[in-house]
Image (tube, rainbow, N blue to C red; front, side, top):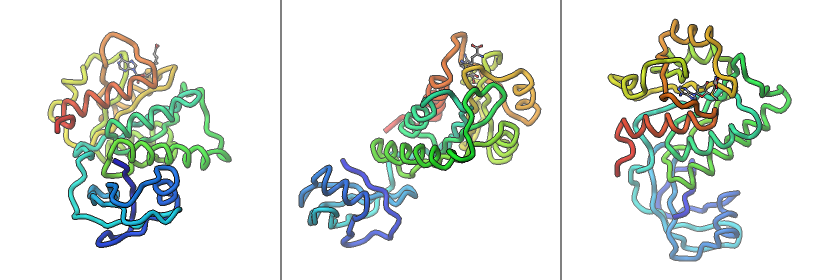
Length: 242
Ligand code: SAM
């Protein structure tokens, strides 16, 4: 069912205009009587029906508020060290589908990819568009944030203040299942770039209170590891049940 995120208060009739309205009216060609879901981006859905397609907007009849079913209670921030090429777009899209709350690009020592100052805004805008589209497609109750790129130390220091940090490190011995025992609902998942983390980066993470975590004996690509870990975490936390 088509899903649109809107900020305005929702009751009675609602004119969905702008880019979302054009998409619904022109691309999806929604007709009167067809069902759509409006979401306030704060975890509440409004099942609605199309009253009129005006050609570039939709007049909707808004139904009763219900909690969004697609929003995990466990808030995982995927802290992905900048990978090469367009891998970060794949990580952002799949992380949102899986249920990540935020995606945070991280600059670490072995990152080959570098974000030039002048292109940062454009890259962020593209990632945020990908996150919005993935949230619409997967039925999320919020639009996960994509944060501006941050150096590893600053990100680790902020993360340990806000929640619990799982630092994916292939030299670690602690398995994910054990690492999750006793954890709460605000988790930060750090993933290295293609070249991995330097030993001193792992030592820094541990000194700040992060848990170094192994995903087992196989070495996963930088774009595979966050998705595997995110899915396993949400499964372990019971977030994959209806
Ligand atoms: N340094 C690795 C090597 O020498 O082959 C390559 C790094 S791997 C491609 C990219 C990142 O994925 C790692 O930094 C780590 O965060 C995560 N990762 C991949 N496999 C892992 C595993 N088995 N256990 C823990 N983390 C893993």
